[in-house]
Image 1 (cartoon, protein in one colour):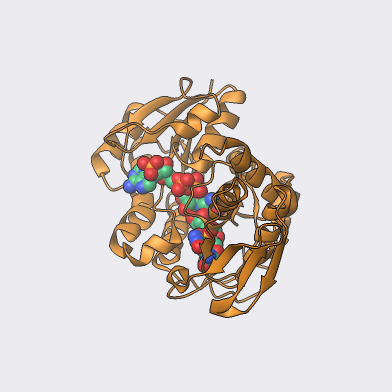
Image 2: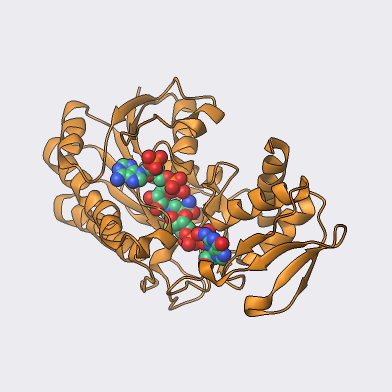
Length: 338
Ligand code: NAP
Ligand code: G4F
């Protein structure tokens, strides 16, 4: 039985990955931060809360990292833990740098020192492309991060490459484009939209306030992406891979797809800060722009080229954007408790 450690197991991807590995017969350890209350809602929703062994862990604390890696000879370590919200990274740039950047080398160095046979996955991101230098973006596209989050992740990416090249570790970096699900955190734009529209459609007619509606993202389903992470660690040699759908969609269109899935028909008008969408049936404003949600520097366009993952890993994203929006919107609509 293979032993795997997942950092960030309480997060969206952590939950789906834990489920995938358990289904494959792995012994799964999940590293969680100490909180006043243990928060395993996602693991419970996936029906695996009792199957994952939970251990206390923080990426900013070298001692618990060393102890954990030394005591258990993990076959695979998936480093998914991070301060993952781009918007917060301008408010917490130092914390974000410490956890998303230096946290990675803390784990890598523990592996190098105590368990060099362990295979390592780093959760890198399309945010590293930022102000994009090529369209679409692949493994060769230069980085130009636009947020403290993206800057820290570039460090995490290159230190993974460096430990592979310096010490021969089986360390891979997955450059993943946005991936969503009904388990997505409510602060991210897709879930904010589906939760807000569900509330609106259920009769609480408060408008959903959003920032930049013109930004475009390459959105896939999180369940498909964790399969790609696992495939990376099954290769004979470690490497870096882009995972993406190759389709990009403006925020505005995601709103329209999600609204339609729960019976709302929206009529858009205005532009920039005056742009809004009215629900035709109730005549109420369902979406409006609030500049409070604009970012100091924006990533306008992301679209990935996952040819390498397709050809070498046999990986394919299975869910298209409309289906994803529909899945998330109906899930929030059905779960709405008022
Ligand atoms: P998420 O839902 O926000 O989960 C983040 C996880 O990290 C949570 O379990 C969180 O614990 C944990 N964490 C945060 N700070 C920590 C610390 N100091 N020490 C230990 N654990 C800590 O994020 P996600 O969407 O699953 O993303 C997983 C990873 O992939 C992240 O590294 C993210 O940056 C990266 N990524 C995500 C996407 C995407 O579209 N989802 C795309 C590219 C890359 P708590 O539950 O205690 O907060
Ligand atoms: O949903 P978002 O917050 O995701 P973002 O910034 O793309 O980051 C996510 O994907 C990255 C991969 O590229 C991950 F590395 C990262 O951890 C995270 O999972 O914002 C998406 C877009 C942005 O352009 C933002 O400006 O939506 C725009 N947006 C417009 N209104 C909004 C809002 N974003 C949020 N969160 N809230 C809004 O009201």
